[in-house]
Length: 218
Ligand SMILES: N[C@@H](CCC(=O)N[C@@H](CS)C(=O)NCC(=O)O)C(=O)O
Image (cartoon, rainbow, N blue to C red):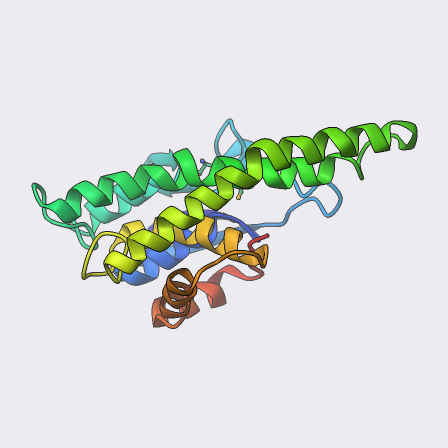
């Protein structure tokens, strides 16, 4: 049995959704975030040294990193939701699988960190920290976010799903950055909003939400 170590309001929701889409049986072990720091509980470090979610255990293998988990699960499902090797769709698939965590998530994480920097600092330093945080966001983070989102919008104008005519596991992988970006309420274009509406309407997405519990992306 596949066991998913699932942290509330986190990337591991994607793994539950993928399992539903693949029709694989699984068990969910839920973890709550620390209400103050929002960090994962120490218990996750007993599962994997980095103590982050998602992690899955499957027949003796412990797999961390969402992209690696997606590869593990799609292989286990006989290559379902992966375009055929040697096709243009497969080449796009490899790109999006890596883009999601390699390029899309870093500016979103930076945004989160820098927007929380001033409120968490000692009050005499707060105006200075707020100024530095604002400058980093204005000069680096926000332009990166805007450029990424414009790229996603253009790609979805060219084809209905990230790889082509068919829904693939790369759409599952891209769901977290697109949801996190759209949740900020600024700048998600019509193609991104339409893609979000289509993924949210998938029965597997709804079943995964029911299994996973609270899920807020921002
Ligand atoms: N690139 C990793 C990122 C893992 C990660 O940062 N997970 C977050 C959840 S969204 C986490 O566990 N955060 C809690 C913490 O760092 O304490 C992946 O895709 O699996």
